[in-house]
Length: 434
Image (tube, helix red, strand yellow):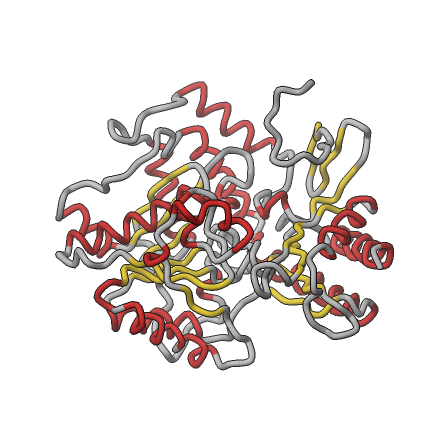
């Protein structure tokens, strides 16, 4: 008998080794990690340089509490990260995972407004669907019915108004204008922040609004005194072909696309250690520090030196190997291949996304719409695994129950030949699953 509390009752193979884009189990099977775990392993598996950086840090300084000390590695990393992201005046708040990071962003938005004397601002507007994390606050902010349903009695529904999903058929600025109606309906004086994923991950794979959306969102938020939070836990750190996906498309005539708070995770340490965090703009930071003098929040392992050392080494790899540019190149190859699969497999209704954050929308080939019941994504994912490919299946994008999809996001270090191999395996899986 195992003493492990597994995430579900299904059987779990034992992973024993990772190398590049591949994982190996104890039965000798080689699996192409087509989803980087949960879009985490951005630089690939088995990077000795990262392990060595962690070991060196652990030998020198393994832990200090963030309420008592800073560390050299944290100071260095925060500066490097801010400049990589093009946010040189922002401050880095380190935590251990994306849920903690989004929870921190929600609390920071609330405290910011309280420090300014606007104590009535507590609502955080998010979208349907969306996913911002498993902790209670982050889950309450999420618009993903299946993950929220059990815990709904623990949430305050009035705190989380919801905006409709992006509509790529609309011009970006027009689509973003729907935020104005949600703010007005909620009462502008009660709204603390608007939070969104620039390119949607687990809840609606690869969905992104049209160009100009985020610039208009930023302008609307400024108009109403609402903070704009970009949840880049999945989409950031080069995965979508740019340091921040919220800035895809370059400068916009509607204005600057600089959120007040940027949330990061997953690719920060690329799976080598638990590391996530947020970048807070200067006004947010200064307001809190000039008010009560402290962010009233914290976690024991925030800024853990060994995790931060992993992040610094990963950032060296991302910058040194040009993995953001690689994500654009290999992502274009993968997207072209997925479009070819769509032409051959009627069950594939749509392919979409940016860089190496791509979605395959699955449905009923007879109607061209979501299947009446979920399950097709799990069947395709199971068939893909039999073919040697790991994917990230999901459902509920359409109405909380219907709307199946696969999220694809291999390591940014994937080669041209490995992308071709991935497409061949997915082709076989779609054929085998009907």
